[in-house]
Length: 85
Image (cartoon, rainbow, N blue to C red):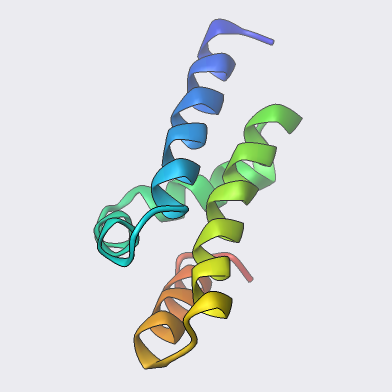
């Protein structure tokens, strides 16, 4: 595991924590250009980085299942538009 890989893993870990936060924090994360990058890393990086990327996506989706509604459905749609599926 290279130093750069560890840095990507830690960055994605931080994003997963934001994605597990409040609705406002999740919305602010969704407004950044980071999600397409996180989703891209899921397909091409080392396992430990992929795992943290998946936690980010899972936390965003969990917010949807915890509080379903049009606004949270938008988040899931934005993940799909960012290349998740």
